[in-house]
Structure formats: C-alpha cells, structure tokens
Image (tube, rainbow, N blue to C red):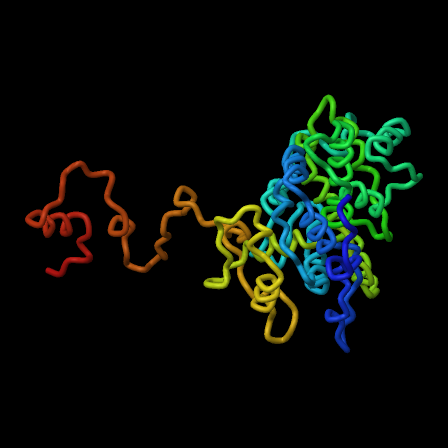
Length: 356
C-alpha cells in the first residue's frame, strides 16, 4: 500500500491559509483542497493513471500544485454570477457565460450526455450499499478519508477487477470532494452524484456529465454568497469549485502579454499559483476591487447597429431651398444627364436656381 500523505504533501482544506487575511478584510473559509488531490495523484503508478484515463478523468492527472487560492477573489466572482443565465456579469457590456463545455475545457473531465442527477442515476439504498461494497466503504456516510485510503492502496497488473473498480469509484469520490464539488462539511461528500457510480456495467462513467454537476454547485454557492451580501452579512464560507470561475474569468480577459498561451489543455495547466496571482493583480482596480479589464469577444455584449434596410430617407426641411431631387437620383427621368445637357436640365427643372 502506498504510504500516507506527509505533512508537507497535504494541508487539510488547503485554501484556508492565513496569508489571505488582512486587517481590513477577513477571507472566508473553504473546503476546497486541491493541494491534497495533487499530492494523492502524484503518488499514482502507471496502472492507476491508466485507470483514471479509462473513466475520462485523465485531465486531472495534470492538476497543478496550487499553494493558495484567493478566496477573496472567488467571493467577488460568486457575487457577479447570474444564477439564471449562468454568466459572470460585470456591467451591461461585459457578460461572460459559462457552460459544461467550459468545465471540460478547464479540467478535462467527462462532459457526457447523461445527467448525474437524471432518472437513470438516482441513488437508492441498494445502490448506496453496492457502492460501499465495491469501494470498500462500510460506514454509514461517505468519508473522504476512507476514499483516500482506497485510492492509495497498491494496484498492479495482477489486481482483480473488483479492486480496479473500487479504485475508480474512490477516485471520483475524492476528485469531487476535494476539488470539483466540495461540501461545506468536514470530511464529507455530497452523495447525490454517487448514483452515477453504480452504472459501471451498463454505462461508462465518462458518459456521465460531471461538468453540469460542477456548475450546479457553483450556482448554489453563488446564491448563498449573494444572499449574504444582500443582507449585509459577512461571507464566512464559500463552497463548490470556485477555482473554475477564476480560471474561466481570467482566461477570457484581454490582458495583452500577460495572457497565458491558448494551446494548453486542460486550461488549468496554464494557471499555476504564480500566474493566477499575477493576473488577479492585473485585474485589480487602482482604488480596490476587481474588474479592471475588458473581456475578449466572447464576453463582450454587442450593441445593436442600425440596419441599412431600416434607415429612413433624409428629410429636407421645408423652405430650405433644397430639393430632394438634388439629394437623391431622379427616378422619374429616363434621359441621362450629361455635362453638356446639365445647364438646360437645371433651367427646365429648377429655374429659381439659375440666374438669367
């Protein structure tokens, strides 16, 4: 069995560093523990890495080591979320939508056609018992610590099918619990997505749309933050995968030479801690707060243009002495006016304009 994570490798719920607390602003807490997941993945042998790829979570094998995640910036972003339209809204001209495909682009996780919470993945007592048995979890609740122990167990080419399936299920549990859909409770996993894990025989886990489930958690977290702000309450805790909002937002800003390269996938690889901090600083307004930059074309609202087909003819003021015939071509005449016939044309049609 792989050794347990050392103190240097894991700081439980690692986005709670004191460095994010100032004398004027207290940063909210968060159960996001991306650093824990990083060090767990770091211990995987080639067999475990291949199993992760088989369930469509291969993108997470490239997870960067985020030493800290700015929860103050995440709180601001959650406050800007349009929970109906799934968009980050800064003002009338800056509106950046986010979709399940964007989650797939950031993390490289399954974006299949089946809903995690759909009728085919509804959790039942029998399904929960099956998951516990398959994953080797016998407790009444799904514990991240138990799932971590299973993921860190030795696996070889001679391991049984049951051992490999247990690893796959346990990995999805820790990926969701530490990064993609962290709960507000200690060592706890939201169980509503677990029904998707009992379908490994008839349906591949990679066909389940985990991306939409991630967005569901983000919207719920945004609703809570906005409710607290509307009542002038201090936002003491944020949950869900708020790091997604940071990467998606910063990746669509116009930042010139600071912009990370666009040919890197999944996009999280282009946003290690130092890049995140640099870009957040670049988006900080001189007087404080964020939103100093413009979005690229995707996040820019196009103002409607006046169509040429709806433009009205130019009106000529009464008594101005100007004739509409001089502003528009005369459609009532079939004879072409040339330089030689122009004087005669003016005398006949507009005698007041010609002096005798």
